[in-house]
Every structure is written in structure tokens, then in C-alpha cells.
Amino acid sequence: MNSKPIQFQNIPTQDLDIAKRELVEQAKAALKNAYAPYSKFQVGAAVLLDNGEVITGSNQENVAYPSGLCAERVALFYAQHKYPHAKVKALTIAAEDNGKALHEPIMPCGACVQVMSETVKRNGESFEVILCADDHVMLVPDALNFIPFRFDL
Image (cartoon, rainbow, N blue to C red; front, side, top):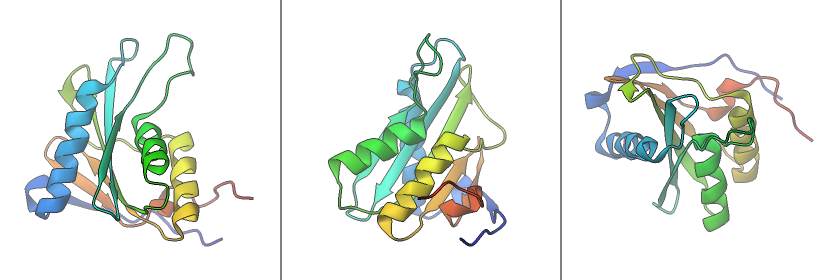
């Protein structure tokens, strides 16, 4: 297993190409469907597949913590269910705290990173992750950069 340090690039959102800007907008729109009455922390995710489809998801909390599910896993699992042979090309994550955009991007949690790792294994290739803030994004070119010592069988 190769472990690489996280490589990222912070760039203004308006400097993204049209396709990536649209993916960012879809992730931001998805967070409006978050069910987060306890944390008030809404997260939206958009997954771009190699067939051109975009699947979105949002975090879904439950009073019986940790029965909820993160936006990234909602989107990735649904994408893999609906299009089992499509490969993930990019994952975009946006968040708001109590309805307000964040000044810095959030990182995916450990469970989401592990699912991203399994998605890479399933795809046979990695994918880009775009982490959104209010006016800029952090581009992570390889999803495996998040977890150098991931669990694998």
C-alpha cells in the first residue's frame, strides 16, 4: 500500500472550470435537503460518474446517534446502487453550520474516508475530491490522500 501525504490546492470557486463549478453548485444545493435538527450542521455531496450522471446526497441525522448517515456515504452508496458499473470521477462536499457557509472546507470523517477508499478499490482507479468553502475550494486530486493507513482485506 502506498501512503502519500495529502496534496491539495486551494483555488477561488470562480476559477474552476464549468463542470467543476456545476458540481460544487449541486453539492451546495444538496445540503438544503439535510436533516440535521440536532447538530444544525448541514452537509451536501455530489458524485460525478464516468457516465455523466451526478448523484447527490445530504447528511441524515437520527436521535439515536450514530444511526444517521453522512452526505458523502449517502451519495456514494446510492451512486453505486443505481449505477453499479459506473466509476466515480469526482466527489464534492459542501457544508453549512446553522445555515451559514463555512470559511474553510470540512474534511470527510473517517467512516466516509474508508468508504471512499473502498470506492477506489471497486473502481480500480482513484477520483478527485472537491471540498467547498464559501468562496474557494480545496482540490484533492486523489481520494486515497485522506487515509494512508486504510483498512483493506
